[in-house]
Amino acid sequence: MATFQTLPGFREFYPEDFARRNHIFRRWRHTANTFGFSEYDAPVLEPLELYRAKSGEEIEAQLFSFTDKGGREVALRPEMTPTVCRLVGARASALKRPIKWFSIAEFYRYERMQKGRGRCFSQFNADIFGEPGPEAEIELIALLVQCLCAFGLTEQDFHVRLSDRDLWFFYLEAHGLDEARIRAVLVAVDKYEKMGDEAFKPYAERFGPLDGGLKAKILSFLAIKSLAVLEQTVATLGGGRIGARLGDWQKLLGALAAMGLARFVEVDLGVVRGLAYYTGFVFEAYDRKGELRALAGGGRYDDLVEKLGGPALPAVGFAIGDMTFALLLEQRALMPDFTQASDVYCVIGGEAERLAAFGDIQALRAAGHRVDYPLKDMAFGKQFKAAAESGAKLALIYGSDELAKGVVKVRDLIQRSEFEVPRAQVLATVRDSLSGA
Image (cartoon, rainbow, N blue to C red):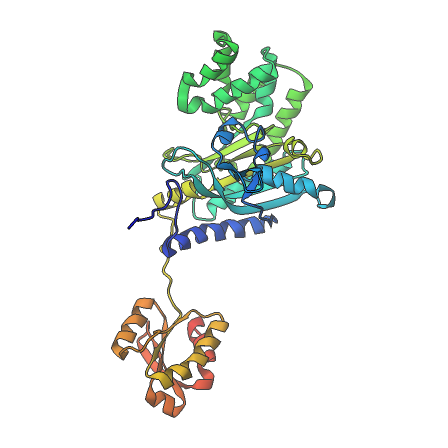
C-alpha cells in the first residue's frame, strides 16, 4: 500500500506547530492594528500575466503556473505586492489617503529549499499607498521594527539595512550609464554580497566588461555604511535632485531617531532589492549574527499601481517571512511552549450522570471556557488521570451521590482542594475560580 508524504518544500502543522505559528500571526496582527493598518485578503490564484515583467525574472522563473480548465494561464501567488496594487488600483478613487493595509497570507515559489526557505511559506505584508514622501517609510520601518520587538527581540538581535535605488540611479547616471545598464548593475549589486565578482558576469555578457575604474567606484558606493559618507560621496555630483534626496534621507533618519529607533537602522548601500518594481528607498532586516536569510524586506514602488492599470499612486511596503523569523525566535529562546490545556475536565459516573453533566458542559463552553470530558464510560481513576494530563485547572465531578443531592463536586487540581456547589451555581463558580476571585 502506498504511503503518501507531504510534497517537498511544503509544510504540515500539527497542533503544537500550528499554535506556534498562530502566536506569531497574532502578535503581528495586533501590532499592525496599533499602527492603524486595516487587514485584507485576496485570491491565492492569480492571472499569470500579473507577474510577468512585474515581479522580475527571478520570481517569474519560480512560479507555480499552469493553464486552468477554462484555458486561462494562472499562477499561485508568489508574493502579495502585485495583488494589493491591483486591489487598491480598482478602488483608488474611493479610498481615503493614506491607504494603510496589511495581510497575513500564504505564498508559493518553486525554488531551491534551504534553511528558512520552502516552496510554501507565509508572510506578513504591510503597505502604504498615496504618500509620496518619506513619511510613509518612517511609518513602515517603525512598524517593521515593532513587529520584531513585539516578541522580545532587541537591537542586539536584528538590524534594518537602509538603502536608496534613487541615489544609485543618480550616481550611475552621473558616470555615464543608461537605464538598461543601470538596472543590470543593480542586479549585480543585489547579488554581490553572496556571489562576489561572479555577480557581474550577466552584465558583462550583455554589455561587455565594466570599465575597471567604474567598477571600483560601484564597489566603493555599495560599501557605504553611514549618511555622512553618503552625503560626501554624492555631493560632488551636484544637482538639485541630489540635494532634495539627501533631505529625504535626513528626514527619514531624523524621525526614526526621534522615535528611539535609530539603534535598529543602519545605512547600507549594498542593499538594492532584486524585484524589478522598486523605485526609491529599500530596506531589509537581518539577524545580527548573520546566520539566517533576510528576516524582512521592502521598499518604495511608485510606478506599479499604474503599470497594473490603476491610477498613478505612490506606494511603499514590506514583508516578513514566517519561516526565517520563527527560526530566529527559536535560536533566541523566545518561542513559548504551547500546551492545549483545558480549563475544566468533567469526571462523570454512569449514563444518568453524563446526561446531567451535558447541560453544564454546554453552558461552560458557550461562556468561553475550554471544557473536556471522557467520550465513553471509564473508571474514575482513569478519568482523574486524564484530567491531570489535560492540564485543566478544575475538575467537575458528577457522581451518583452528587446527582442525588443536586450538587457538583469541584476539585481544584492546582491547589488540591475540593468543595460542593449547587448545580445552578456551576457556571458562576467556575468563572470565579478561574479568574481567581
